[in-house]
Length: 439
Image (cartoon, rainbow, N blue to C red; front, top):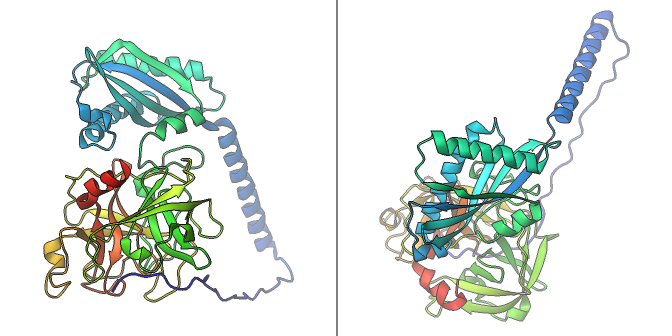
């Protein structure tokens, strides 16, 4: 069956009243224990306050530029979603971690992100953002000199995989707004409201058989597609500041873009951001009977501004292949039990990819899985997407950069054994997406 939206409602929780018994008097032993507890609490509180007064760290951001002489430039470095850019960026970022994590003091170095790899007559030029945490009393210029000294010392003493031309190295302090704008050129990044990276390990499993909701900024590419007057219908995924990726079957009943809106944020009501839909593109060969080519695009108007709550996901390279049992996440506002109501708060679930050979077994989906489909879940069931999650993203993490690999499409009921969720395989449609959007 196709996942579909259902009526919207909030869960009602029973009010539980706890009995309280008043103590009529205090005996000496209880009074002594109570006094000790109060003294201990006051002592701990003073310690915590003193700790934060002394160790009140804040973030410092720097724009680093330098020349690497033992790399030859490739045209694919200019495409930030390419395999070559991703691999080379990770190598550079890993090297920066090696240089600064131990040398700059415990916890001082936070993260680095390559912004650009450009050609140079002697190799390539690297532009990247470096993030550190230092006491708030620190001065950016003094910290900059300290960081430069650490780098120069490591260039002398460590065997590094890349050869940095020392005279070419420049380090410029930047504020959080400039840092955020630079990172907007990279897709698939998650940031907290305090402009710190949100690592992959913070995300845990939920949706069906789960009750915890997503944190703000955890899935900033998730959108809710809503029909005016009828509410949430489907999920969708932001792939640029104007385009959403979703499922074709979401528009079976209504293809009129003027009747649709898209919202962002971890709740449907109230949304963090709302946009109108300007255009809907449904795959020309979508087949309702077989669920083939279940993919569509929705263009937003006006464009969205990137922030910690609204950000685009990365589109994978067409050649990307995930192995079976790869850990992936599905997110959505759909029901958390089969045939239940749509949820106002965004939920997430960790699932695993399942090979098409297994998924096409007679006791699973009996040959219904085509090359444009991807199975994910668990053969024992329990964790799955469900009604109302349709059109939403299935994403995977590659060194804290997130890519969309699937679109919630169909499945038999929700979270049943041997009936995992079936997703539109995004890599199969990478060229189609590019032909319609230029992305």
